[in-house]
Image (cartoon, rainbow, N blue to C red):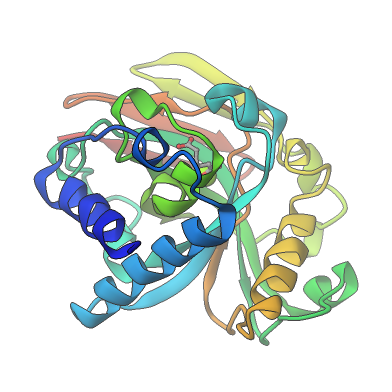
Length: 254
Ligand code: 0L1
Ligand code: MG
């Protein structure tokens, strides 16, 4: 019964054409059903030879929650096909109406799941550094309710991870400033502490949520901890720059 909604969201990705929120047709859609739709979408991608390379948390900062008027942290999956290498051009026409936001990315050296604690996350850290997430809601005008955005894999579309590793500066990471410029003008500023007060708590929440489903964050997977600021729309020709301590993570849109 849910499969038609899975197909419809996949179709929106393929056609690069936004649709109305699922809840306009299924007002009773539950959070559990929305995660089922998300998982079924992932299985289709994996069956089409893509691979799971990590997970993302979303709506973990007030700035992001206000941006889309949804006030609940959510989680989604990251596919290898979504990763863009630093320095590569970003092709606007891959997506419907893309936006970008700064995030702290984390990679663990040992798996974490059910019952994970902040101390476990700190002990397991291999990498904590700058990243950009590209979002592309499959809904018109990025307008959706909580079950809609969960079913749509939390608008996941792309991501770029930087090279700077801050694991020796864990006490400071929350206060690291990031600014995002579009075509030279500063559009957003923020700091990772905007994410739940400590973005590593986002990793704890993700590990526990996956654990409840018998899954884990595997070693080597990328975890995006959630947007620090509201996202910014971009178009062909734009230059997006994110300035972090020790690294500029930027791209030109072609
Ligand atoms: O932080 C996030 O990645 C939230 C994604 C879902 C909402 C949106 O499309 O901005
Ligand atoms: Mg995000």
